[in-house]
Every structure is written in structure tokens, then in C-alpha cells.
Amino acid sequence: MLLHDDRLFPADPVTRGIARRLYATIRDLPIISPHGHTDPRWYAEDKPFPDPATLFVKPDHYIFRMLYSQGIKLEQLGIPRKDGAQVESDPRKIWNLFAKHWYLFRGTPTRLWFEHSLSSIFGINERLSPENADKLYDRIAEKLDAPELRPRALFERFKIEAISTTEGALDDLKWHDMTRASGWGGKVVTAYRPDSVLDPEFEGFAGNLEQFGQLTGEDVATWTGYLAAHRQRRAYFIERGATSSDHGHPTARTANLTQAECEKLFAKILKGKFSAEDADLFRGQMLTEMAKMSLDDGLVLQIHPGSYRNHNPYLFETFGRDMGADIPRRTDYVSALKPLLDAVGNEPNLTVIAFTLDETVYSRELAPLAGHYPALRLGPGWWFLDAPEAMLRFRELSTETAGFYNTVGFNDDTRAYLSIPARHDVARRCDCTYLAKLVAEHRLEEGEAAEVAHDLAYRLAKEAYKL
Image (cartoon, rainbow, N blue to C red; front, top):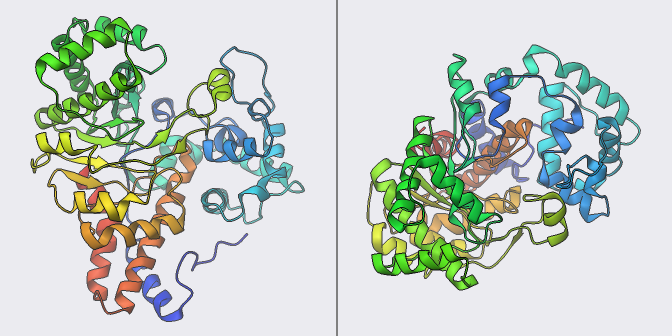
């Protein structure tokens, strides 16, 4: 399982040589991880990871969704059920089940990330199999107790300059407070994710809203009080390092209603007597409200639309959210974003980052929009679009009209901590492959390409997210 030095580089020897040279200039740059879902508790407590299964399998929905598709129950992988019923608790059994089905990941980015981690962190250059599963489990488990494998030491080993986690509006951010109070120098910030108190169709919305009011002391039964509560929580997050908000809506719809229309719509939401159209309109209005707030407090606005979240009702009812059943859907941006862009799209001091799961819109909609509006930037390939081929398609489809500098570099968007350097390495190699092609075709000089490679790997993310 030796990781080839030329992995992901072009097969053509001339272009491959250019890609090698470009990559050599950026390979060791620090990592900016401006959006992701690692657990802030890891950095606060700095405890050893308990076992290989908890480290690699249980937190990674890329892994367990593939296994589930082949008939393996999530209970067998130790994923906790909402009702507290028994699930597999022996991490070695979970690891062996994973190893037995490792062949399922052939050709996937998951294999690239996992094998990069085994080799670079644990010095393991054997491909996982049922025959060596116990041996590799023991080798990993033995090293997990070492001080250099604790979260903070790995943070420094990975050359992470800054990382953002993502917390809900009701989170007390105690782990961030603990990390800051510890005196450790690692930069770990949060991001404001208000879906639970912003989306009327979010489970437990009414109770969440009540808690929102109690937490802020604002009268969230009024439109003005509700907005004031968001402003207060955003300020609370900013005090703990937040530079962005994040919104996972089903669509990219935005709205810009009058005050009276907002109050009327909000009253329907509060009564619980609203339609799916009302809920979507409310989410759309709140995106515009969040953008207006960003003009005041400086938070970067991230929009992650286009996912039919929790598509599998059985998994949602049994295990909860984020169980690998988020499915891409067609997404409109030109009409959907227009109300927000009409209101704030010409503001050069605002940054709205649009992501998509529908890559057909890159060249038709997103790149032309980002190539025009000062406030709009394109997020990199995301969930389902983070394979090397999709990363290259993103560059091909977006560069024509948006260029490189209306994008924001790369973010790993991961829950799997050890995959962070692997994911950034894949992105850097893919960008060098794309840039090498432009150099070979005499569309860029190699010096220019090296500058762009540096910007894509480091500068654009750092500046866009104010890190």
C-alpha cells in the first residue's frame, strides 16, 4: 500500500513534471480549515482517542453510508440509537467488520484519505484486509496512547494554522471556552449554525425557539425580538472566535419581504400553522436577514443548499440526523439568490459563499454569478463532489467565468480528524494537476501557476474567512 509520489498527477510525462514542481512549492504550507465538523471537545480535553474504530469508523458518514448500502446495520458499527437500545460496543468487532468490507471503497476518495492517514500518521503501509485487521488494530491502538497522537499534538503535526468547528445557536460553546482558557496556542474557532432555531421544519423547532428566548432574554414571540436574539447569539459566537455563519437549507431560496410581510409570516410560523411553502419562504427571508446582519458584524455567510437531508426516514427516526442519508438534488441559484443579491450583492465588504451539490450549475449559474457580484464567492466541491475527478471538474466549469479569485480555496468539511491533512493534500494535488495543464498548453506561465497554487492552498481561504 505504498502511496505513490505521483498519485493524482497527470499520466502525460510533460504535464506530470510541471505538476510535480508546482506541488513541491505548496506541499508543506500550513492548513487553513475554515469549515468543518470536528468535535471541539477534542481540543479542550486533549485526551487520547479511545480506539481505532472510534477514530476512523464511527464518526465518518462516508464510511458507514457505504457499509449500510451493502446491508450492514448501523447498530453493528456501534452507532448509538435514539432509544438507547443496545448496539455493538466492542471496537475490535467493529474494526474487523470494516476490514472485511474495505474492498467496497476501491476508487473512492475515502480510500485515498484513509490510506494516507494509515501511512503518514501510523507508518502502516499494508492495505487493510480481514487477514491483517487484528494486527493493524493493535498497532494503531498501541500508538493512540502516545502524547504525539493526542488532538493538540496532531493539530501541530498537521500544520493546522486555524480550524473552525460548527455549533448550533443554542450551544453554550463551553469546549471553546475551555480551549481558550487552557493557554494552548492552537487557533480553534466556532461557526454560527442557527438551523435549529431558523428552520420551521427542524425537529423540535417550537421548543428550540423557547430555549432561544430564555438564553438571550429576548422576546422571540415578536419579529424584532427574534432578530435581536440572533444578533445577540452571533455576538456571543464572535467573542469565541467565530468568523462565519453556516446555513444548511434544502434550497438556495432567498427573499426580501417588507417588515409587515415578515411579521405576518413569522406569526404563522409561531402558531405552527404553516405550509411547506411558508417554511421555505421563511428560511429564504432569514438568509437575507443573516446577510444584512453580516454587514454589521462581519460574519462570512455560508450557504450549503441542495441536499435532501435525512432522506431515509427509518434512519432519521432511529438514529437521528447526519446518518449518511443526505442526497443531492437539483438546485436553482439565479432566481433563488436574486432577492438577497438585490439587497446586498453589490456590497464589497460582505462575503457570501455559495456551495452546491449540483455541479451542473457551476458553469451555467454559480460561476457567472460569482464572476459578477462583489459579495458572492464560490465554495469548493462539497459532499459528493470532493473526489479528485469532481475537483477537476469544478475548476474546469468555474474558472472560465469566475476565475480563481472568486473562489475561496479549499475546506475539508470533515468530522474525521485524521483525514484533514489527507483531504488537503488531495486538493493541492488536483489543483496542481489542473494548473499544470494550463502551463503545458501555454495558457499560464509556470511562475503564475505557482502563485495561483499557493493562493488556492492557503491565501484565499485565510482571507475569505478572515482567519
